[in-house]
Image 1 (cartoon, one colour):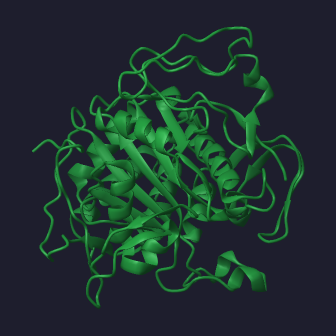
Image 2 (cartoon, rainbow, N blue to C red; image 1 turned 180 degrees about the horizontal axis):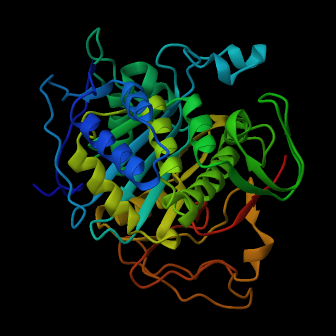
Length: 425
């Protein structure tokens, strides 16, 4: 069955755990075996090491308690929606923290302080990655839990969903916010960021100014910096050291880092190096818990093949449209115009066009600023949601194409191809 993410209703509920040492083991064994044949440098120990590092998968069930049969996705057709939640739990993550402030955090499931939804178009020609702010105040549906359904909330902080009802509750809430059906999900820990950056030999980022954040132990000078290990984790977690010191600024910094990581991971030097690919596989299996809808060689391979065909320039990272909460300056709420435009694009499987800035914590890198449209150019008007004519975008921003939905200029983001630099606080 081919899956269209816009017409299949899936309700995710209580989490259960089962062993992942089934079909996925055969896939990983085959991948590592290819590496052995290719370079003769990966031993049988590496095969066993990868297999034994697998974490149990997360089982998604419906609100009624029935098992969900995941759709299959072929690389040749079908849209794909995946949610990735980064938990702030300190349980089992002691190596990532050194100060009392860092150790005094969430335990158990933790909070979903980083949540991203990836939408891959049915033609596999564009991808949209939506960062949902941790401080977003939004409706939280009733979520099945081991103690029975949780109470629905008309307005609650988004990052509490993981602790309320596990990964399924985060998925349910994100589905309501985006209008998408999300059958695939994964949870990544702090240690996962460290492992991924180490696996690719570090992620090189640009700093427009020095970044200092004692809360996460970060002290970086301006210029290009290659981040590995705990330093990479501190960079993506820094809030006080970048932009305006808010979580929204941190989101733009995370988009800069992920764009750089994606460029590195898809470079010839990584894709042609079986040892590096093995390192990435080990980093993933050790630190990411997949929903069991992803626990299938067919699904994993087909999604990977589909994503591979998306040009970096059509891989768009954006912040979920939001504005300051009128009742609390430290929180944000959905911004109606931007949400309507985003949901229209997702429902129609249409590319989005960013017309705003990269975010409060980033700016265009010097090497790419010259490629920006001339400030004197006047972009053409475009059709807004509902058929009305939208005003031209701000001077100096890319003009929307005829096939893309132009997002309001208050929606920030960047493409994976864009070179951006972090602005220190």
